Image (cartoon, helix red, strand yellow):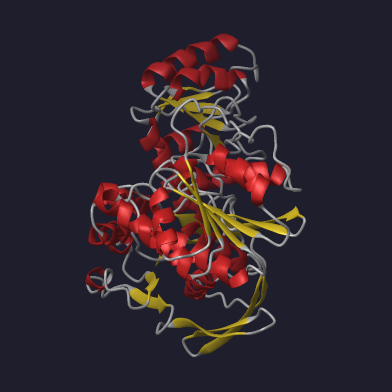
Length: 508
């Protein structure tokens, strides 16, 4: 947005221009006149946190659960923001301070925009900027699913990077706030924008799809996530299928082969090109070689890749990513080196030949089974699983936990440590199978202390649970004491502080 001046940005956001510094020129009606300007006149980026707003950025004051970010608009200007977008009452207060600065380029003097709904203004701005990128030829891929969408996004970004100027949403910028920020971070000249779409209820994927207007929509899978809110797997499928409904005619939809929950929605979109992936699909894994390379059959093509990962669930995610790359006209090949987002199956060598699988970002029955499968397949020695509560599973939550315990027993987990009251159900099912050693503890600190005393050289330890359990503390403690000595106190999760307003609203 560096080339967008105050007038153009106000129009794009649907906002009113309340104050313009005297040294900021008015835009000319002709696009050519804007192009002739020797220096860009717009913001270098967008921030929603006044504490870290960068020099030359646009600060958007959002209303959060604990604070109204608009109250910090003047503070953002003082910190060197290019301008602010806030509710009218906050914009007027910021404009008064900006006018009082009175000196060309003085701290506190900047563009002030007013919008009755700053979030709507942020989203409109993101949609407008995406339109600008599209006009230069950029394509948009939107990815959703019950589990694995972040990893699929990471893989797709790696597949496209050698061929296109690609921007993928960072970490989990996947909500109505985060996705807008991800779009606005894409520089001019971007050729592919890869976005992640998350939800917690009906209508939210539809809202994100309307902003993104994707050329390619990917549904990685449908599983038992957010049952507490949505009630049934059918309702979850309907929520994910909002992406299909929002695709424009001629777009490409990429879905798992043979998923009956999505079939009713696919039948409604004869104007969309459907590509399936997985066993029996249009894109499927045809060979997994001993040297780590894989052969993928994509229509009539055979694609050979050398991925930096080998987990079965990520190879399935790779199929979805390959399908998306082909939909953009890219044929990937050779090495695929992926740096996955944090806390998603990262393997950490702790010393004394102990390996930590740090997969504690979140958990549901589908992802929990996949992680246990990977532990069973790859651990050369003792298999240790630290499994926490899986939240938001609704009335059948106890059954889901018992099934995971039984699954761990069948796959030969040697030591199971459950964390939390729901996960204790796993322990009972595990023990009833006559499996290995089992312990139940109330929280992450107790789990960390237990493991520090019991891990031995050659162990592989998986740490996984819903984010609310805080199992990242276990991983942090183990990493801080790699020799297995019991630390004086388990490490606490790092504090990130509170944003002025709503955070990016990360969801699964």
